Length: 382
Length: 184
Image 1 (cartoon, each protein chain N blue to C red):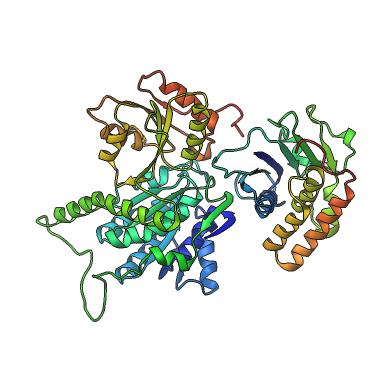
Image 2 (image 1 turned 90 degrees about the horizontal axis):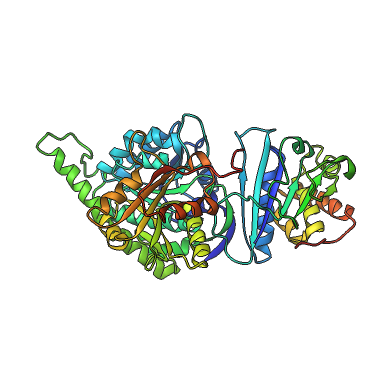
């Protein structure tokens, strides 16, 4: 183990390098973060095998679809509008069962233009068939990227590792980065059974008639749901080796908690800190960080959240409808006696600090289901 | 936990200053965190950066509203930004300015004045005051040792640039008469 003081983007890039991808393709212009720059740097120094500097994010994902189809370990990173430009090809990557790993540095979407954090970008890609893992801090980002390669390559599903732009990618702090020699202990080499090979010609992603198309989509759906088991297994294996265990979600002081905030991303570290402060005042509060948003762990959440009073906190929207995480939590808790409120905001980098979170805990204590924007704190107008 | 806020203008290395301080603190066995707040990515507009230092792991991701220490690396931001906003009563404020203290008007909080721009111009021929102000921080607060800042600078910059910066921060450090003064 090597503890370094560096920012999230650099930490993630080093972890990716230690996983030795065969093909990396990135478009390194805004809204990309310095993950692309770092991967290019590693390639220039001979530390990684291939770096393709493409002319757009659409090309980046397309290059990886080609690379992964030949049986290569593949990686890219993007953000915001860059991820949106990939949209069409994301469906192909999942439908063709190509285990691409991508880090999404979560940034707001235009318009208006913003380079700051929220999760509207990756949330809008939730139905593309990719596994989505969300990280609270840079340690989880590094660890999740390492696990993502094995999750992808054993389930034959692409994985997005989502980390908050700026709050994590641009924040310098201490991160424990397993060196390549230790990554090898947990990450086996990628040896696919089916891949494009001139000696053994085959077709991937071909045309289907109405008699067959739906079966492929059913398989994809079922396999994505089943991947929960692999995500848990690989998270446990990682924990055995590195003493940091991962699963579908993280419960924090949840068991005896009456009032719980549920969410994903870096805000949940702030929620945990708030829970500590309120527990000191003997308040029965808790938190749940949803690490795995796709596949969505409905049954597992139902077991542990039923009967509690819940506030769902999210930095995203479904314009013209209810926010995505709230909708899914409500669906998971159908038929149980659980009060669920929806709090959405913190968009475009707006601060969601402990003061704001305390207000949300106060609100759910009314035991009335609320649906509201998270109010801006005094002093936030810059 | 100590919370430090830096003010300056984009292009003056304000983000780097917070990062160097975080790296220096980590070398001394502490936990640290540094992150920026800037507008669009252009030179000139006011920039804020933040640094936290603690003996325990830092597990929050929020802006610093009530700093223990504020460093103003560029005097012209005083007219645009309320640099002592939220500064704790017992906190410290260090301002870079070539003006005498009595000509600088702040809202009542006591402060120290350091003429960092002259030192920066002497060594860099540009008013890039980030590292110079870290020299002032070491002398006036003792949060980290000057040697740790020097090491962080050596790790980050090419040899020639690092050597120049180290000379500049040493000159700033030596130019300030008093040692660590209260609060920390």
